[in-house]
Image: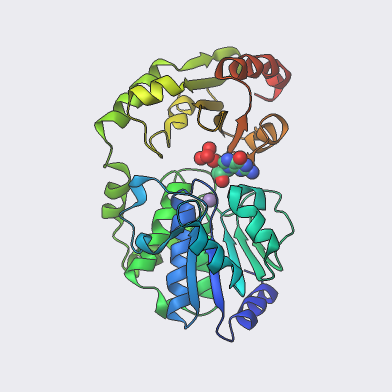
Length: 336
Ligand code: 5GP
Ligand code: MN
């Protein structure tokens, strides 16, 4: 972290403030881990702090320390708005554009608080007074560790904070296997284990707590897998009907797209998930090497993310979304 940035954050936190920390819609391990990790750290240095999420987070993260303190903007709206209105400082973690907080956007735009962005997504917007953006980082949790380190706050890292940050680093780096995993990531992870993160337990809590219906849904997804050898591409579809038949719960499809990417020779993988409630098709894109799914998603799916992992949405039906995908794929043949 740059010295000037450290000084700005030190200055900001030199007096007690009402801090609010927000993550993106459908918060993942990195969003929940980084928001709560920072929250517990701020409290331990004498700041007031509250985490507000746009909506609920998946069950496989509910075991994490202090998740019961999170305010859900959708479900606890009045309380959440009040907290945001009283904020002196709003930390926005693990996203780069206010549109990523969905219905919370309006309240954030009205706020006079000082905004601090901590994020690793490409092309960050400029809404924050203090921006710590680093797209070489594998996770926002790793960045929160660097903030704590720069503020010389290591003595405040409890096993709870270590567990939260470890979890986000682990989930966002695909268990330390994506190219964004660096020697520094491993040094941070090693420190977190020393501060009390129980790595084996965390892996079990996140990855070995599948419901039978989730595994059945994975079976359906694998059955629907289409491999397009010519384009080194594979995709999976899941219809609303298939989700309903398998008792779908938020977070159940997390990681499914990686099975498509694991097919030999495939460098581009996509999962299309129908969401009849929101009338959209949610799209997750993954790649290996230089092919930028961030660019692909920005161009075609009103989304974004990172070079090798991005998300977006389509307003067409599931079938038409796939037809359209097939029609644009030839334009990318020489990049794939
Ligand atoms: P996922 O496919 O797991 O939902 O998301 C992959 C990555 O892309 C994550 O880093 C996530 O934050 C980002 N992402 C997902 N959906 C969107 C979206 O609609 N817009 C943007 N800008 N980023 C997204
Ligand atoms: Mn992240």
